[in-house]
Image 1 (tube, rainbow, N blue to C red):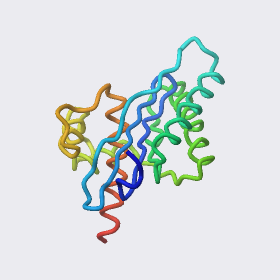
Image 2: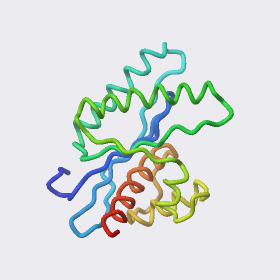
Image 3: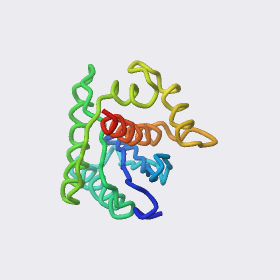
Image 4: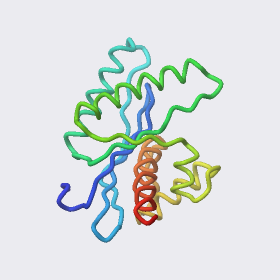
Length: 169
């Protein structure tokens, strides 16, 4: 499918060094959403970090070339208890953001609570609730899988829903 079939295409990214989830969602002229693709990039834990980041960057460039999105939506970095994980995720985000910047695409970032609110209507929704709403909003037989891919799709939907709401106000 090409951009001609959709008013706009958003690529949602759930960044991680080991696993990065993605979802490409198109919005038609009548406002319907359609899942174009979703999946994950995986890098090997034993590889040096610079090579893992290069692989993420190249995978992201390939996605951008394939789907030619109008915008990229990325989950904001969430600082939990594990600082090492936060640093690693931050590095992955950097590789993703540079790929989007080189492609000349606008990037919008959302917190986990913003994503849950936009997709499920509740900022503290659990993963199952968000996945069920993704399934419903896209008229899918099953929620996208694995979880990281479903998260990438939810991030794309979050951006489309947020932009729709902004146009109404």
